[in-house]
Length: 141
View (cartoon, rainbow, N blue to C red):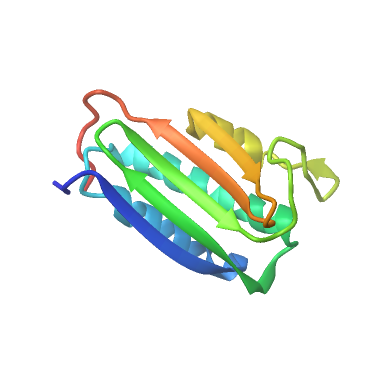
C-alpha cells in the first residue's frame, strides 16, 4: 500500500502523441493505493479527456507548447491540476467535432465531483478536477 498523501508532477508536449504518458502517470499514481480498479479506469479516462480538451481548446494542438499535470492523492480525495499557457477557454462550452458537439465535458462531469477553471492575468489556464473517494474502496493493484 502506498504512503499517502502522494503528489506526482509531469510536463508533456501538447500533442495527442503524449496522452499515453498522461494516462500512465495517472494510473501509476493511483495503483497500489486504496482506489478500486474501476475508479482508476474512470479517473484515467476522465483525465485523458480533460487533457485532450485543454489541448484542443487552448492551442488547437501545438507540440511547441507544454502542459503541466499534477496528481495529488490522499485518503479522501484525488485531485488533478492541469496548467498551460494557451488561449483562455470555457471548459463548459460545447466544442463541435465533425459537426457534432463533443461529449468530452460530459464524461469529465460524470467522473469528477468538482471541476474548476481559472485563467490568470499571466495567461495561464488552470483546470482542477477532484473526486472524493469512497470510505472503504478496495485496493487497486
